[in-house]
Amino acid sequence: MRILHTVEFYYPSVGGAQEVVKQISEGLVRRGHDVTVATARLPNRSAATINGVHIEEFSISGNAVRGFRGEVDRYQEFLRGGSFDIMMNYAAQQWATDLVFPILAELPYRKVLAPCGFSALHIPEYASYFSKMPAVMRQYDHLVFHSYSYRDIEFARNHGLLHCTIIPNGASQEEFSSTSTTFRKRYDIPEDVPMLLTIGDHTGLKGHALVIEAFRRARIRRAALVIIGKTSDRGCLVDCKYRAAKTRVASLGRKRVLLLKPPRREVVEAYHAADLFVFGSAVECSPIVLFEATASKVPFITTACGNAEEIVNWTNGGIVIPTVRRSDGYVEASSRSMAYAIEYLLNDPQERARLGEAGYRSWFQRFTWEKIVVQYEQLYQMLKDQ
Image 1: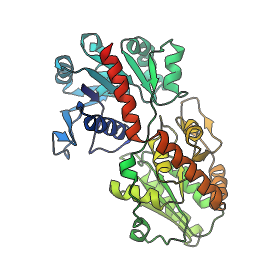
Image 2 (image 1 turned 45 degrees about the vertical axis):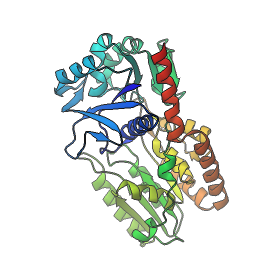
Image 3 (image 1 turned 180 degrees about the vertical axis):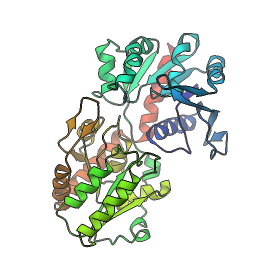
């Protein structure tokens, strides 16, 4: 099949949407398909083909609400002129999908939309955007959701849109088969010191403040908390540095918070080195980091962000702390609840081992990207044959 995936950013950019589209695209190439990704131009992307995936770059930014800037006409002409069998638009509310909506009827190939959560569904500025969304979604041949219960699929059900498939996210079997143990030595974390890990960019929405405060409150002695994420212009890095210093002083140096931005290889090593994965995010669709924790046999503690509760039910690899769902679509939880969960699991190595093993078994059986790619392939083939 000739397949087109569109996504706002793609490798070497790093993030949840980037990882999903990268894994699906490269997996389909390995299975013999011709895959193109249409995405934003990046100055550090040095090749037009990466691991067999063809990259079509466009200098565009914005979305249908904020407005578009850049090569809008060129992108739409590319879509009109493409000789693809299948196109999948990944994630709404960004230019690579929103610019498809006005020309859907003009595109001769099969069309799939993966909304990826509708994070702005409850934001007033997007009311008009979502009032038009049911009609737009009906023009797609199929819809893909990552959850049976999150807001995007509930939106579809509420509008009688039933032409959909649930395909979960996952983690790479090839990538997580590495079990390097050099991470602790590299960052001077002794083997007998509990290591907690959280991963998410410093956007202010990934729950770093919640996790650091819970770590500070938790009645544990020596421990290290590793936070991995890129910085953001309007993010929380400065606040994280302040909280990290406060935690170290309050614990008389027994608790360390490390703020890191290592290469991907070290991120995987960090998972394998961790005793607990702790996730305090306020908004997600289907957090890949929880699947990556299960792939590493690391039990996780999480807020009920995105479909985290569903992932717990699917994998039995972690626990969800009490969480409040706000009217604006974000979630929040107390640092005290997370601290209790940290204390509970760090004080019960048998329960940690049980959760880690259960999560790993579930991931290996159902949630490797290698298995998930086959689900996309089967869906695309079905649509092509219709």
